[in-house]
Image (cartoon, rainbow, N blue to C red; front, top):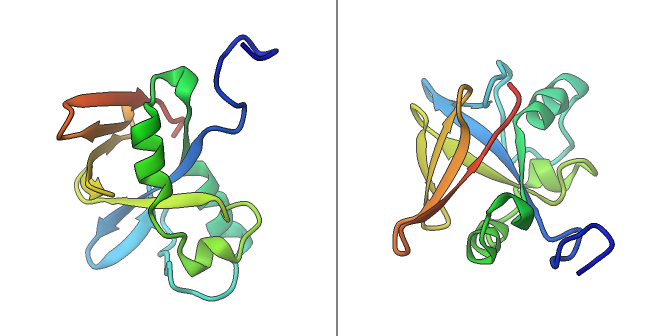
Length: 132
């Protein structure tokens, strides 16, 4: 056990930026500014704020399995995120009408219930709340 009462490393999490596909555009979960994940430079201040608001941290103490965290970490970091110190370790997950697939995992998102990631092969899932 570590000093925080858990048996997992304190930094054993994965940050997920929830994006939604709407009318041919990708937007932050509750944002309005289109996201070009392939942009070479860092996001501007307003887009960064929307991306940070759309970020959900999945951690072991909240019931997120190591398998799910590892699968999500395997998602490539897009250039837009890599160019930002705030987003360099985050991974994008895109949902359409609240549903998506990321790294072979089923993903559901709503502003009312937050993020749910399910491993279809194992039938396990996690629920993560997000403000917004």
